[in-house]
Amino acid sequence: MTSTPATTDQDAAALLAVCDDPAELTVRLCDLPSVSGGERRIADALEAVLREISAGDGPDLTIVRNGDALIARTELGRDERVLVAGHLDTVPIEDNLPAKRRMVEGREVIWGRGACDMKAGVAMQLAAAHALRDPSRDVTWVFYDHEEVDASLNGLGRLAENHPDLLDADLAILGEPSNAGIEGGCNGTIRVEVTTSGVRAHSARAFMGVNAIHAAAPILSTLAAHEPQTVTVDGLDYRESLSAVGISGGVAGNVVPDACTVLINYRFAPSMTGRQAEEHLRGLFPGHELRVVDLSEGARPGLDRPIAESFARAVGGTVAPKLGWTDVARFSALGIPALNFGPGDPLYAHRADEHVPAAEVVAATRALLTFLEPGTTGRAA
Image (cartoon, rainbow, N blue to C red):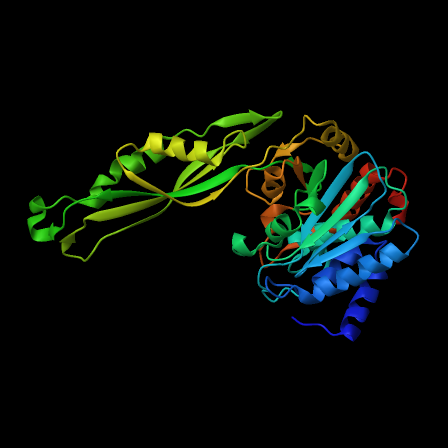
């Protein structure tokens, strides 16, 4: 979606008017549709808001734009730097905009596309940036595009390639929905194709051939019998999983097939590299052709770092492992410990009834401010 200077001014003014109310800010961010590939309008509005914040009574921000991704950095010379990131795009709309504030089971929620994944996290960032006056740590705010689509388009990946120096930090916080609690690091994921071969024959004379689909039975048996491991990394227990997620084979209804492919997904603990995960799979299926079709490294949470421990204390509660893959892995690849922290239940992400508790957006914003600048929470709801 394109925007004009007048539209941008109106959008920015609407956001600035509620920056001290993270819940209402979430509503207004949701009402700027930003399905992947259509982030221009919301990026324009956020850039204008960040420039207004920089011109205000808080710290100056150095603002860099790359496509529809934004970086805004304080340059205060603090001993530590924290990076807080969130993606601007959403999955397609399903008659769930404009956003609404509703009562559900006795609590107020914000309902609408992106409310959970992750306009609430972006609201947390923007409200905190607006409230900060004298942060104890330098802060880098990152807002990026194309998270919900092919990894090659990911705006954070583009920033890491074009501006790695601007992403340097002692700790990265990604505002993915985590029920306003900390989920550390993430499992890695690898998908492989394991192929069996046979000999074609007429199915009426099957004894003349070798059935490749039948030959896949030991592969499926290995998967069915596999017991997932739980691996402790930096004090968090990451449960692994190994699953067949697809199978293909067959030529015709009267032909013994000469090839069969089983697609396997392995979610591995962040203590293991992608190469080690591949070798583990090759060891499970010796004698079979194995081809890697997708691989994303995991991320250690870095909870052994004092700055990560300090953030955990500020947020409170129990730190849990992130079993799914998120963009924290991109920070881990840069040598930056990374945590997932944002309002919303990830189980509601991408659903038609996507929503986030209003109180959770406020609580997450206050917790982030407590970490960045104790005593500022009153300036953000």
